[in-house]
Image (tube, rainbow over all chains, first blue to last red; front, top):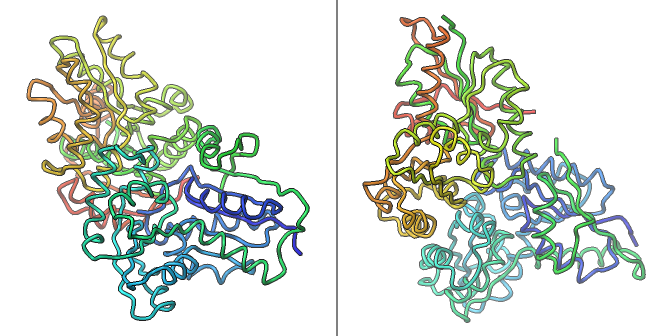
Length: 269
Length: 269
């Protein structure tokens, strides 16, 4: 039994997909979320800068006596984690392994698509992980650099001509490749599930990294007997690097509950 | 005569429109450019965060014994400058006054459009300045939050369906208002001049803040007898907060000359 909190971080809001899954599945766990909203997005920055920001995010969470970290950021998970996770004693869970494992399990044809930021796609991290879990799979990846700003501008709904046009542009090649499973390799992308699913067709299963990683963490904590005491109420704290107001409003929608008293602004060094 | 350098800063690449104008008009001036590429974009962040970043940008430049600062960032100029410029002895030139003055001079009908980031438009800074220079003008403003990510992704050319669709969406109202002058109130936007001009029609004059502010600074330095010695060669230095590589390539295109030896990475505190 381990009542210490779990830390979750992302460049911005996207990691709340993982946070929500953890809140629902483990209401007795203390959770601390960090969104680096003063420096979002990470997706197009250089590898060195992504590593620097990731270390600052991790060290902030380590200052809160946590038992594990979920890196709910596709860019950090694919670009930085391999290099830096060994620097820390606390277990750090990125999104790549659980998501690739789930995709490998879901696919029937072995044809799997991967979408993400430029850096995530260039890293090849998902492709390698899928080959480990299902050797001989065909992977097709495509960078979608406009998806994050579109999501952050709320352009996520069916009927929005801009997001529909961008989805068509980015995903046409993947549709031609007749994939049957698509990894939404950036935690912002599940907000586009409706539009993506309409375009790809109902035969393509979408895999959401935040949710898969939350499920994987729960399994690992259970195996290690490191879950919190079952009958206690979990406490949740949110930290952001830009002001709390915009985040409180959007995150409350995202979490489907009012979190406005639970958010604080912080600095990262 | 004053041979100290002029400092120019922006959240990213956009301020190079001002930098290029200064290089061309005053080849004998030393110039220092700062692009906060590790934290771009500023446009959607909170006022407090914009002010914090602006102070760090200004203080970095002040560490280089400069004689004047050009704030080549529409968001900082409109949201932060009024509040913080009084904190410093060095003269600081934002883009609002010179750009509004030029627009007021160019308009025949007195109907002027303003486009910018959400924060810039909400500040009302351009509207107020235009009323001072040309009382009774009609101003029509529209936030265009997707323009910066589109420009940063190179989506600036005629025939690009995405940028054309977004331009149509954002600018239709302004076209209906029959403006004859349009302020491109963010230093990224001049890269969209072709597409914007095609949509608005040749009767609408576009005003570029970076260029206007560079011209205004030259006039002011001349009046104060603070130009550099005429026969000396100006030296140029560029500083960025993300890695230098991506910036060197894009900025060389932007400046129409190879600046790759002149760029260094720095940190801001």
